[in-house]
Image 1: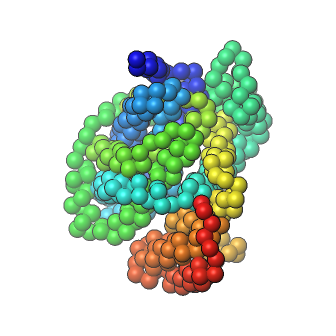
Image 2 (image 1 turned 45 degrees about the horizontal axis):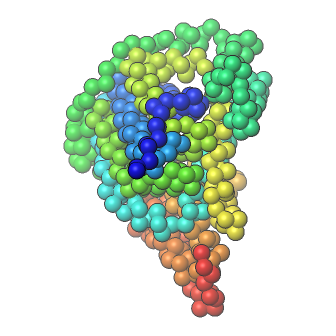
Length: 494
């Protein structure tokens, strides 16, 4: 007699914590997008009427799909503890599209509407490229060591999430440290909050109340919050089609930015799916890459200009014990918040110092998983794979001025930060191979690094032949070294 199927709930209490973590993480990106584009003189009609609704459609479509995918996995494995994949806009990719696509398009055309349409077309192409990449996604996942992939993700978590959000946490120590304490007690030590409230909700309520009590959040926040309230319908448009014509007639150089960042986005999805497998939920990486590509294309049909990805916060949601409800709620709330302008209102009302500690926990959980999911002998590979993102973080924050700003520290920071994801994974993969005494395999990874450097995917500002010759020679020297030792040593079993 067949065993009775286990009921997989639509929503549970733990989904609330995960919802706030994912929602606040995405909302931070949305607000950065709005502030940056308005600062570039893009009109509010494009920012709030086109770009954010398009991004919301992509986020909604992806989250709904991954909630369905989680239910499918739960049925197949007869489990109730399956966590849906988080989905949103990748922070590094967002900055690249802001300053590598939108800004150059505006500078060259002198027209914000034309620049927006070019960016929409670039986003559509990025999605199509990721769908194509999905064909080889599983093969890449199988051949890249887990320590290398998770180490690269941990580098992102340490710098862009846990590190930066800890800075934000301590900007107002009275609030930030109190909320951080609540997060550590509730989410790390798993102690129940008063009135059985979800930890994230309790932290936001207490932190926001404290902000107003100490007058850190004044009444002007409310007036700012309601400035852009209105109705912004989620409607498709033909901006992507018009943008394709503009892109291929006068802005073809933009594609040299789109291709490498799309490869990065596909690898980020692969890494985060790998992290979820390590945490207990196995999803098909090829399917996820294809879904991310389709989601990006769907968003561009509605005016969005930012590619989407399986989000790095997924493991944090897994740690919280979330199911599929947080993903469903996130998609629905984003659609509503974008259509009404509530995203800007919420961001103005809730201080950053209240939200930041929640994201510190997300980064902490990602870093911890990178080590917990690997044998102790691979810890050096994980640590090495994390390091390139220190350089990438500085580059991202200083944008085009990074070379001048950090020159007194080291001339290698900028070139190390270019293509940091590729550098992190390949260095980590070399280290794992050497630890296993598989020197020929290490030489292959060093050869790939040399090839990437030659065409500009690493250590160069753009795609070009012989883009980083010194790094090409350096990686080839490493390859020769590994080949030499391959004739001296017997490989260890992995």
